[in-house]
Length: 255
Ligand code: BEZ
Picture 1 (cartoon, rainbow, N blue to C red):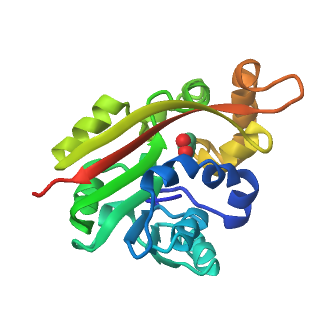
Picture 2: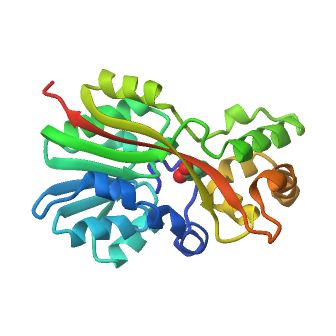
């Protein structure tokens, strides 16, 4: 689920082992998309293509894009049309009935460029249906990463790749980009993860980890785990991360 290649890498095997829940929990946003047979749909940040294939299986003609060449190869192996492209570089013009995105938009730095590209890609009246991290997403982990880096004299703002807006903030960006908003909701979704938090950090928090030398990253992860264990880990050692989703459906108003 990558729309930016900025210092974050995606290994399909590790993604499948540690992050399969990302697509498994994508059903509500897929329901909101409600793909129809024959529609042309763009899947932004398609990752390894699990949801792209579900859209394809609904009879739509889907194109997936992702900035990660490895994830695009994994998506193609599922038999879907997937291309290597970043979210700020969309070149499509009035050719999609819908643009879909799950768990990818929060990696984008230039949201104005992204939304302009999505607007251009849609036909008039086309829909943009997406889910991303929303305000307060993974807050306990996020805050403890900031604190652990601060203790090492590092300002985490300089390496933080995540953008988690609330409905008012993102609604204003959508309106500015000439979308009319059908729905936009902030949803608490505490999410059990398959292994230890350290493995989750290896997949999702690479930019924070690589702010310290490789030899110090294990200590950093241990420190973050200790800081949030009481809140996010039960007595059986099962971790549940404090995910919050922003889910919306917006329509391309004529420009
Ligand atoms: C998310 O999908 O909410 C997410 C992705 C990367 C880091 C943190 C959260």
